Length: 457
Image 1 (cartoon, rainbow, N blue to C red):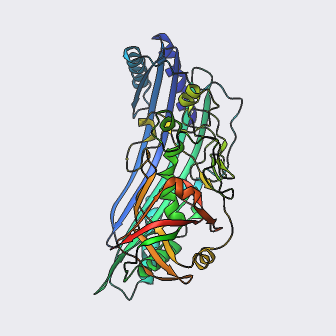
Image 2 (tube, one colour; image 1 turned 60 degrees about the vertical axis):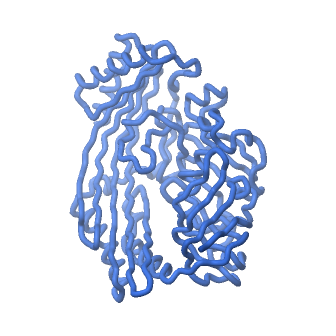
C-alpha cells in the first residue's frame, strides 16, 4: 500500500505541473478503524471502517487551492489534481504564502508508534476487550444499581506525504482508546464518572483496571455537597490538565492566534509568565507518544520545542505559513487531525497548528502529598470548560472534584465553579506533582495553584 500511495503522489506532482501549478503537495492516508460502543452493559454498535484518502494543495502565483476525496483510483486522483490547480488560479493571492516545506535529508523515528498485533486485531478480539472492562466495572459495583457504558476505538493508519520540492515521507501508526463510564443510582444520590487508557500498543491497555477504577471513581462521587466560597488553592489532576491545556491553553501559544492578536499571550514572548519551577515543552519525538510522528502534516521534520522554560515563554508553535510570516524557524506543528468533536478524516482538513505531545515537566510528590500540603482547597479531577482565548478568563464547572480540609479529602463537591485568569493561573503555580500520566495530547502530573475564586450553590 505504501508504494501505491507514493505512486499516486508522483502522479499528482506530474499532473499539477502540466496544468500550471508552481508547487503541489499530495497527502495520502490508508486507515482502518474499529469502533465499538456499549450502552446499558450491552453492545450498541460495532463497526469496522476502511478508508483511503487523498488531499492535494496546489500553489499558483501566491494563490492556494485545496481538494480532497476518498479514493485511490488514478483517474480520480488526476481529476482531483486538476481541481486543486483550478481552485488555486481563482483564489485570492496571499503575499504571506511562502510555499511548502523543502526536502529534508532524513526524518527521526520516535519509535513505538506501530503495533502489528493491534493493527491486525479482529472485531471479535476487540469486542472481548471492551466487554472485559464492562465486566470488571460490573463486578466492582455488584452490590449497586448501575448502568454501564463503554467505548473502544482502534486506529491503524499509514500516512504518506510528497511534494514538488522534494519532500517524501511515510509512517505507520496505531492507537487504541478504551473507556468505561458507569452511572450509579441510589435512593438519595446519583453519580457518574469514567476512566480510560490510550496507547500506541495493546500492552498499554488494562481493561480490568479501567473498569474497576471507573467504578471506584463513581462511588467516590456519591453524596456531593456544596462548599463555602472564597479564594482557595486548587489542585488540577492530570485529566483536568489534559482538557484545560490540550484543548484550551494550547491555542494561546498557537502562532496563528498570536499573529491575529486573538491570544492573551500575544505580547508575552520572552517574558516571565510562570514560576521558575514550571516548564512546558512540545515533543513530537516522544517515544510511543500518543501524538508523536516523524514529520508534521506538511512533511516538516518533527522536533522538541521548549515553550516555557524556567517560567519564561520562549516559543510559539508554528507551521510553514506562520513561520515564514514571522520570519522564524518552523516548529513542525502543522496538523490535519480533526478538531475535537469532529468526525472528519485527517485528509479532509487543511493543515492547522496544533501541539503534538504537550509535556508539563514533573515536580515532586504524589497526589496524596499535594493534598496534605494544600490544607484547605479544591481537588479538580475533571472539568470540560476552557479559558477565553482573548482575555484568558477561565470559569470552570467542577464536573468531578472534592473539598479538601485539614489536608484530607472531606467530600465530593457539586454546583462548584472555579474562576481565575490564566495569567494568574500560571503565576500562581505553587507545586507540580510527580504523578505524571500520558493522556490524549498532554503528558502531565497534577498542578497546584495558590488561589482561585470558588463559588458554590
